[in-house]
Picture 1: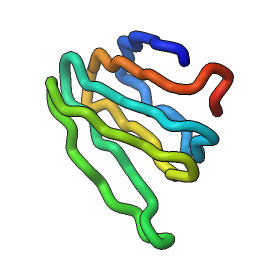
Picture 2: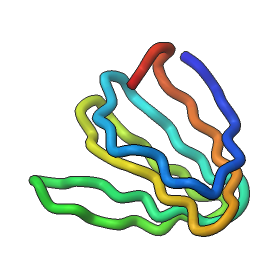
Picture 3: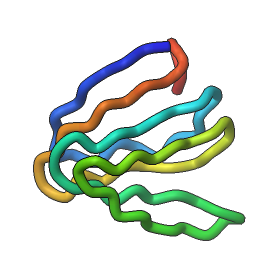
Picture 4: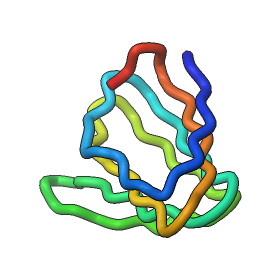
Length: 78
């Protein structure tokens, strides 16, 4: 597994995990866009919130301004 701390105000790109991913918002706010049965849903994450993406979960994070995000995922994961 890899652990990375991101400080960003830019959206990530849509991707589908080939391993599990834990996404913890350390500071700021993030709109997590997730596709469920082909429909996009948005989950608002605030400091202290955690999002779990399992294998095959299609998602993209959109920080709302600057956000500090801790990402734990399988090494080499997409």
